[in-house]
Structures are given as structure tokens and as C-alpha cells.
Length: 337
Image (cartoon, rainbow, N blue to C red; front, side, top):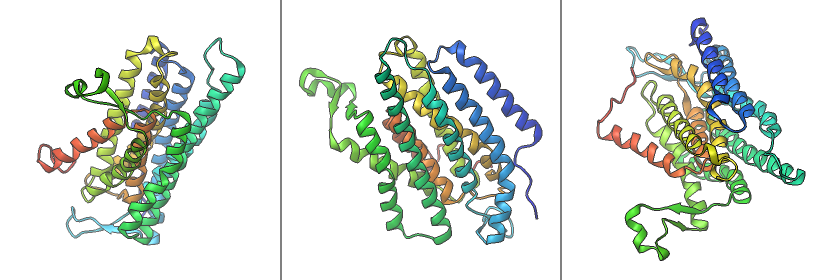
């Protein structure tokens, strides 16, 4: 039985129209590197269309391969294709690869020497490719887990190793290990400063954050739409946070160091949202596809990478923790049906 695309023609046209409006609004918002931003938005729409077109054939292939799971939310517990996240992972990584030339060709600030401009381009490329390598590794691990059913000790060790490329690039390119503390702790710090340098412990925290994000998305699996739905909510929240920070510091784009970091976070999140949207529709109740561990690990590492490179890792951990705690306290329904 052949599957049909989750999004109809009108929905695809709406996605393209929204992307066009956003691209037209970029110059008016005063965001630096507007070419990069428009390319990222266009690739997000393209990722959405490609994922929508390739998802049915992916589901048919998974069904023929016997990679299916029983849907306990339906009468009779029918078998549903699992590991559909491999389609989103492939499309998302392809979109990031296509974005890399735009990322490197973005015009450098005026008035800086050519050598310094080349160094900035290499730094941006290394940050982006380090994140892409970690995301690819986690996507591969997730698909291997769906096929081989890996033990938990492997699931905890491999994500830690997969974060090394991103952490090493962060160390060589950014190297910021300062942590902001709440106001009530400032009187107890030397000099009354609101930040403290924790050194190597910051990298331990980032590594643990990546493991937490990948497993936190997976821990609430089993309910139609929950895994991809919460990933979309978190991704859109981080996008909103990045846009607010860029708007607040629009006049300090050349002097405020985190400005480029928030742009990098947006470049990772926009194609992710675009590629995930068709899968979210297919996974909503009544689901015709299960996302599998492939998508859970992909989403977790993408959110962790955007938080780390966007220097808002605390926002990622707090936001994911709030969603989990609200679910445990029954402050929101546990089903998106």
C-alpha cells in the first residue's frame, strides 16, 4: 500500500508563500548577513517540500524491510513504519550542506584586512561543519539503534563521543566558559560580578547537555506526535529567542560577540523546522509513521548544537526541563491528538 504525502498542494504553496514573505522581510529587519538568512529560509522551505515528497517512499521502504512498530493508540494495534526520521535526517543534512557555500561567501564587515576576513570565514565554516558532523553522527546512531536495538550503555557513550567535534571547534573558535549567575548570588562573588569562569567544567556541562537532549526527546516516546511536536516547540522557542537577541542588539552587530552566534543558531534551526514539519503531520494522531530513535537523536543533537553555538545552552536545558516537568505534573495534555 503506497503512502500519500502528509502535506497537500495547498499546504506546500502556503509554505513557499511564507518563506517568500520572510525573505522579503529580512532586509527590513536590519539583520546582518541578509543573504545568508534568506538562503537559510529558502532552504528550510525546500527541505519541507523534499521531505514531504520523499517521506511516502521512505515509509514504503521501511514497511518492506520490516522496520515497523505496533501503534497502541489504535484499535487492533496495527503495524506502522518506524524510523521515519531517517528521511528527515537525510534531507536536513543535505540542506545544511547546500547552505555551507552561502555561509562562507557572506560579505565580511567593511574595513577589515583580507587576512582577517579569510580567518573569519574559516572560523564560521569550522563551527558549522563541526555541528554538522556531530548531527550526522547522532543521526547514524539513531538509525543503528532502530535496526540493531543497541543497549543503553552504548546509547550513553556514543553521544558523548559524537559531541567531541563540536566541542573542539567551540574551544578553538569561541572558547567562552563564563556562566551568568542569578542576581541574588552576585554579592557573594569577588567584585560583585554576575558571571563566573568555570573552565573545563563548562565543556563537561556541554557534553552532558548533548546526552540529556538526545535522551530527553526519546524518553517521552510512545504517544503520537509527542516527540516531533515537542522538538518543534523547542526549536521555534529558540528561533524566537535568537530573533529577540538579534533585534535588541541590531545596532551592535559588529561589536557584540554573541551576534554571530545567534545567527549560527538560526541557520541550524530553520532548515530543521522545515524538514520536520511534514513528519510532524504524518506522526500526529492517527499516526501513519513513527519517528523512531533516528529523529529523537537528530532533534536532540540539533537543539544542543544550536544552544551551544548560540551560547544559550542554559535556555535549551531549562526549556526542555520545563516541558518534561509540566508533563509529569499534568499541566498539559500528554497527547497531541
